Amino acid sequence: MASTLPSTVSGATDWNSADELEISTQGIDTPAEPVTIAPPVAAGAVTSELKALARQSSHYTVGLIANLCLGLISFPIYTRVLSVSEYGIMDLGQRLLLMLVIASKLGFQNASLRFYNREEFAADEGAKKKFYSTIFFGMLTTSLTAAALFQIAALVIPKSALLGPLTNLLYLILGLTLLRAMGSVLWGFLRIEERTKAYNGLQVILRGVTLGVVCALFPLIGHVARVYFVAALGVEALMISGLTGWLVRRGVLAFRSFDPKFFRIALAFGAPLVAYEFAFAALGSADRFLVRHYVGADQLGLYSVAYGLSNNVNEFLVAPLTLALVPIYMRIWNSDGIEKTTAFLNVACDIFILVAAGVLAAVAAAGHSVLVLLASSKYAGADHLIPVILCGLLIWTANVFVGAGLLIHKQTLKMSGFLVVAAIVNVALNCLLLPKVGLMGGAVACLLSYLTCIVLLARASQKVLPLHINLRRCAQYAIAALAGFALAVQIRIDATALNFLVRGAVVVAVYLSILYAVGGYVRNGADWAMEWARSRRPCA
Image (cartoon, rainbow, N blue to C red; front, side, top):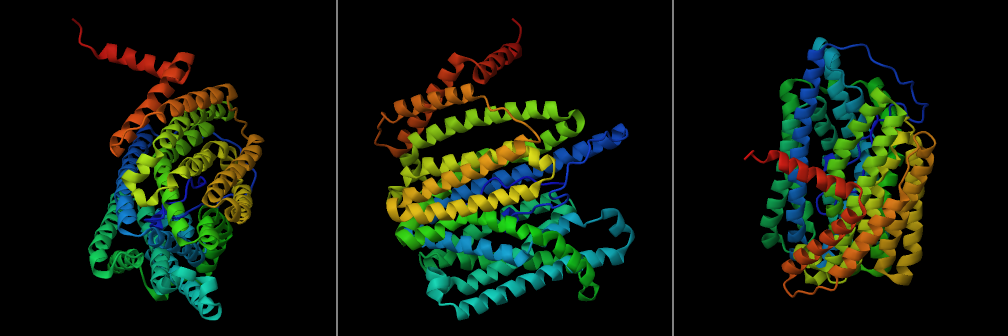
């Protein structure tokens, strides 16, 4: 099974191990296999599998929505309680933690998804123990090794050069690195055993309890970034201990069952993806370190808030889209071939651009109000960055469409290469623009680096699955969005919440009215809705 490119980088305020990259390498950079029609399967078996898919998908969707809501709750708490510079330090610590977790895992977590064999393990208890024990203790080995190497580097390299403001958080971050690396395989075990209720329930509990502990510790420790890492370390330690105990009670963990040969095979399977994961993390995280270096701690806090807000808006569009789109176009490809797949992706991409343009216009018009409502007025100035960063994230989201050809044909190594190029562009542009134009330079670098990656993906994917972007419709969306924005920004209401609602409503109303007038999806959708409403009326 191939996996899609991750759509976004998780928000700075609450990165969980389950959000990290888990990518299958089966068939990396190999020619596409011929499409074959599977032999007929009993209708009852198909129906059963579809029911299981629908049930498990609903569990993941509910968990996803709950986590997104918790993110929206935690964001204004952190931004209001922490100072601007402390919020930036928390964000920076999360980015360093992400890099260390990737180095600790060495792609090993993907082996738990790739080598699990339910039928074999049900028949052979020894093979089952070997699988669980090797994956568990193998991850423990790689994560301890990575933590030790980083500790040695911290002793040799001057702390101001390696860690800077994170020096006092070193041991907390190293502890979380170990826990999140181990968590990646433990959460993976829940997934492969299809314990979707437990997986999603525990994820929501973990995030909710962490937020509660953070709020409880703020009065005791102080309004500093350290509180988040202390709370996360304690809560995640309890969760990982509980999951480990669950495996011990089942009798599937035993150090004597560790298989060095299987460990090497699993490591060889996952290690090639480390470059991919680092490139993706660098693309979404390197700018934080450069902002801190070039323009200072307070400016980092402003940038982190702008990025976090943009990311939260983008997540509400991206998460449902990614969950739904990939299985659908894979099914169409396998059953109906290239023409129908292309037609479906063309329509889906066009509708996504329509929605994205309206959302971008609404956020741009109400950006200051959103910032004050969800963060506070102390982050004034960050609102100018939000439309630029959000535009970059929305452009990046298009990877689920333009990268479909490479994904279907299993050319994921090319996708990794494009991420590396985009990450290099991001770092270079930040180094060039931040000293000259300040924070806006970082936002522009974000937009241009994501655009670079999408252009490269589109050019390569076009050769194997050609997509057609309707430029005339895109121009209509742009004109309608600009008209809505231009009218909305003329409105000024002192009440922040009311200003946000009115400006957002004006943008949406103008945008949809113009698109309804010119025809297309909006008019068709409105006509269908009215027809459906008429059909639901009781007969006189």
